Length: 475
View 1 (cartoon, helix red, strand yellow):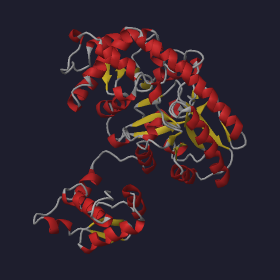
View 2: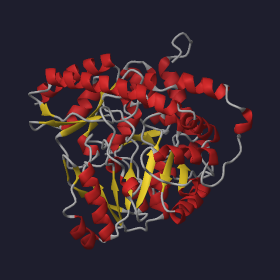
View 3: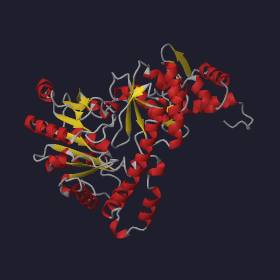
View 4: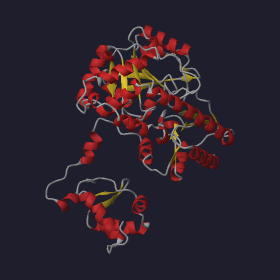
């Protein structure tokens, strides 16, 4: 609001909302934000907002509807145009891609607030990302090696060759022809859901699972069946029976530094799982986006390194290590599968960013990535140890947890019954953003996913201390 202008504040609010209605940003049926939220957005008293909304209602632009709040009125477009308006809300509700659950939407919205303390965010903080080094390297790169044109369907050959060499350090032998460059791990999952599964398919996932926090498979009409975990990772004893019962199409797992629990599948359990899936002819999606983030010693060999039958589709990404904004990941698998997924990718985005592919190829080829990982592991270990000390100080009576051997996450389990939804809302109102366990398992009412990767040391201490007081108050 321009408080120095000669226009009353309520009139400015009226004009702003009317403009959104007139230009179609808020079509018929759109729910107007609550009065309190509007007052915060405009930086005015609630009474000023009430007056402006009253004027809009008197002009027929908005109306209060039982159970829906205040919405853009049905007769709005009659005031603005003689032509009937499109019912965009009907289009929105009829789209096949399911919306995020409300809590995820609230988290995504809150993450845009620079003043909030993010205790659950699954990414490196900006201070840990090598933005300056990458920009400097790009400025000094050879123009002949860079193109702003489209890359080939499977992605930049230079990057696929670099990824092929990098994977050898994990004992994965993959030619560039068996590698598809994708725009992050999430696109890899979307391509798999579109290209390899049919509506009504069932896939096995760990319970809890990162996949429960997104709707990429559900929107494709695929059902997910959760499998239990223990301290060694995914339990295998019921897989054969459940595969016959549900006719499962594949199994999805994060064996290294699992999201959200931070757990680590043992080498013996990995071999056991691979042997069982081989007998049952059950394909596996191995999500290894955290595999490079070990803190004491390297993770056991990936499932893909043990795969002798082309059973495993292996997913890797730079989002958790080099920078989520690069939007670069890869799928490794049998060439016919990679060819199929590459064809679908070309139909959706015609290739990942040429600039990002060039940058990642440089970092992998010139040893810069390994140098960066060495630094990141050292800093993450310091942050993990610091967070564990904070938990020992304030949470020993409240919760249990395990020490993760890598990745970003500590899986906090409360000892007493607690309304996690109330805790989430109360913490958000106090400027603290949480990732409750119910995001990853809708029946979970005991856990929080804590991340030591994003918040600063000061924010971790302040946020966890304030959170412990909230928990004691709610309990």
